[in-house]
Length: 305
Ligand SMILES: Cc1cc2nc3c(=O)[nH]c(=O)nc-3n(C[C@H](O)[C@H](O)[C@H](O)COP(=O)(O)O)c2cc1C
Image 1 (cartoon, protein in one colour):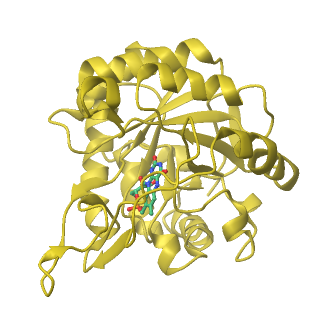
Image 2 (cartoon, protein in one colour; image 1 turned 180 degrees about the vertical axis):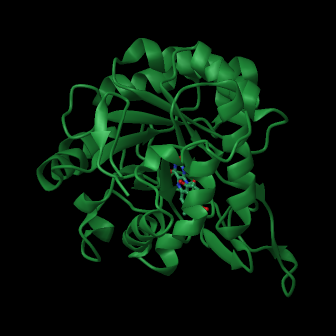
């Protein structure tokens, strides 16, 4: 099966990427396999300033996956521009880099982009719009149409690089949120971010996470993410990056059938740092076994007209 696709103005050598927040800045997984063999990777969210993150524990497992509340811990734009992106520029020849950014207001998205935009070593931005908007009293940007539109508009004004907007699954109509993003100039969508979740330690009767609640990821998110991709695919024509609960090539095929062109591996890399490499190899094998000539034949083919 031919795995390359031209999207967002460049060729992705295959559809398998690493998801933001689960692969650091690439170097963290590079010792386990050749990260340049992937379609690409999305680096940890960059915020306007250095963030120490939330109190421990930051992650907790449960049978269908895990919940986390890392709190967007990151070294800030200066370290990303002077250390992380230059390393990726030297290291990668073929894999594409997306920079995930997280703002607390529309203005902050523009500010973060302007602080990084002249640096080489990445192709596009992925907007994590799951942050609470401080100016609007903490409303989550991805769940409010006006805040979402303003964030995408501000980002669009700040750059000519491709923009993929990473939406939250917990909205009544994700197709509508996707359409708003495209109307404001988005070039792609990443679906989905984590689902809000809360678990208690039954012994202490306190939340297991230091921050209280968190975001759910892992296998339980698979049907939610696949559904979101299908809903968005019916409404908009831009490329979709599917993410949520992918552990195997069969899981990746679910997203492709729903209309995703590229997929991202997140939590699965924690259990097996070589998960993305394995999914890529097995996807190729799956395609050949099923007589598929090109991965593009699969994209959206599960949806009836
Ligand atoms: C520990 C952890 C940190 C994450 N950090 C980010 C982040 O910085 N930015 C972002 O957009 N998504 C972040 N995510 C969400 C993942 O990129 C992904 O959308 C989500 O985990 C669902 O995919 P999965 O089930 O394959 O993990 C994080 C997820 C986890 C588990």
